[in-house]
Length: 282
Ligand SMILES: C[S@@+](CC[C@H](N)C(=O)[O-])C[C@H]1O[C@@H](n2cnc3c(N)ncnc32)[C@H](O)[C@@H]1O
Image (cartoon, rainbow, N blue to C red; front, top):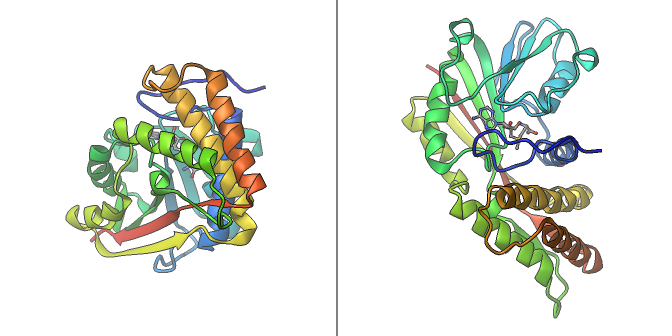
C-alpha cells in the first residue's frame, strides 16, 4: 500500500512507494545506457568523499558503495527523507542528511567533497533555480573536486517505432499534457544550457555527454517509467489545482492506461536524451 502523498514546496512529483519503485526502474534504465557511475574524467581514489544531492532513494550511492572501497565516505542529501532507505539496509559508509539544495549547507560540509552528484532535478527545480543550485553545490567541493549532473529533457520525449500508417494518439496525448503542465509551472528547463551554467559559475574543464535512451533492452522499463512518471506529475499538479484539463484522478488513470495500451499494441517506445555534465572546481 502506498504511503500518503506528501509535497515538499512546489515539488511536482509524489513521494510514495510507487514513485520510489519508478525512480529505481528509471535509474537502472539510464545506467544501462550510460554505463558508468562516475564520469571517466573523475580520478578515483580510496578516500573519496562524495555527496549525492537530491538523492531520493539513495540508489546511486548504494551502487557506488559496491563499486568503491569502503574507506570512501558517501553522503546523500535531500529536502525530504520520505524515500531514504532504512538504516539497517545500508553499508556503514553511507549517511543521509536533510537539506534543501538551494539553501546554504552547514559549515561542516563546505569545501569537503571530491565529487558532488545530482540526478534528475528536471521537474524538481524551476528554470531560474538551476544557476543558484550550481553555485550553491560548488560550495561543497574541494578545490579540484567535480560537480557531476545527470539529467534529462523529459518534456522533449518523443515516440519512436510507430508502424507506418498507425498513430499512437493516446501515448502522444499523455506526453503533450505532461509537456503543457511542466511548461506552465516553469519546470521545463532547457537542459542544453546546463554546461554553459557550469562555465558561467566558474567550473572549468566542463564536458557534456548525451545518451539517447535507445537501448532495446531498456525500452519497456523506460516506457513504464515515463507513463508512471506522467501519472505522478499530473496527480501532483491536479492536487495543487494546477491542471485545468483534468477533472479527477480516475481521468489521469484512464490516460495512463490508454497510453500504455498504445505502447504495447503498437510496439513503440518513448525516447529522450539523458545529459551528463561535469565540471571541475579550480
Ligand atoms: C526525481 S527525484 C530523483 C532522485 C534520485 N536522484 C534519482 O536519480 O533517482 C528528485 C529528488 O530531489 C529531491 N529534491 C527536490 N527538490 C529539492 C531541493 N530543493 N533540495 C534537495 N532535494 C530536492 C526530491 O525530494 C527527490 O528525492
